[in-house]
Image (cartoon, rainbow, N blue to C red; front, side):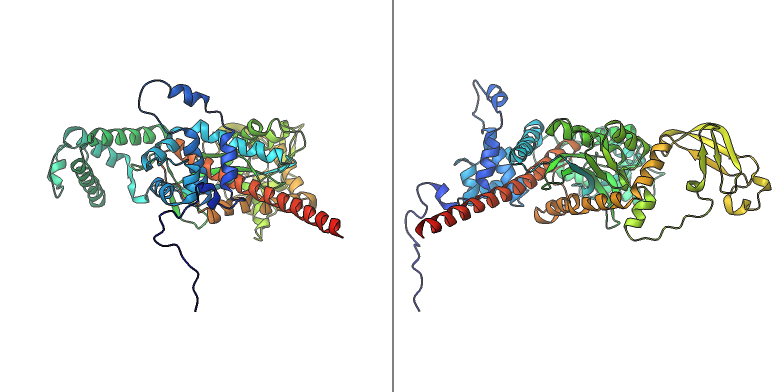
Length: 512
């Protein structure tokens, strides 16, 4: 058998230009073009003058975007690829920044990473990949870089804070933390045994950190506790994570409750380009519609009247419906009933359901299915819905034959709560029952949900590797940039293939 001749032991294996080893249609050249459009003048002013020279931000930006495309997210893994992978070598321009430089750059340059994302949108617009005829908004829970057992209660935190403030010293050598070390900490004796065990385990970990190196670990630990305490008090939380104090417990689609962040995207329906993205600490999507629309207009210009906006039940509220109406957008938001029906679940509406009570605007009263009226009684504040509501009570409920079917109240008087924007809610519900609305709403499943599936499955972005809201926003910006670049690259490839086919056909015809 004859083998292909190899070049083992040859002094020069690579061509003079490393670019020659990369396929001409590789996506790294698109990454390079996009990053080169950025304005780095602020950095050039910042790093001018005396001092050790810094890596140009252009190089780190290219590396970060390419690494997200290649599912390489750890800063150490990125640094290793810069030394081993020819694509990364080319983008790094023969430089080798270490993992710390890459990690700090990703953490500290929010504005620059936002600008890269905006350039992908403007590039997509130039290619005609954004139509702005229909938008879909959706949210997805992404796991934070923190374990569930890293969370502690307010009482536990207070004991730890007291101990760290008075007892924790640098250089202490201890193999086991006993109860006697906490005898002066107020409230320690009242804790459950599991809580005591957790505190002792945490303090033991802090001792190991102090012994590990020469850094001022005590100050770092005190700062971590201070930040956690601030989050607890400001947001009235029951628990807070010491690993990432800004992460929140959220329920994912698998029904698992984990420390997470809520990621948001707005997708254009023409080619599935992401035109806005964000990350928030709220587990509910309700308050994210308006920020997404505002960011879309910042990135794409003022949206025209009549643009279709399809959103799922998580964003359903009278305020959001009113906002879309005022903007003169064609909104599609199903209520809980319509959402359940769309999932194939049976929804039973009883005769005395609130939806069967008719509001009489002139009289400011409700008319029940049996023809009895409910009059306005008082106004109150609903803490759960965070809004003022009006309460209407039945006038002749006790005389009604269907009294027991209508209400479970002890006084047997039916109450109706009227919340703000009820008219808008009714109009949206009637709209969503039409066949046209159902067909338009179905389209979002073919656009925005595949985008989320793409960055989770194909780009491997199911959780965050960084901590704190500001930094996870940077990380999410990068994955949205990578998604858009992948779409743009596919569009360019198709156009080039089409041109090549036309040229080949023309050449064949000329020969004939």
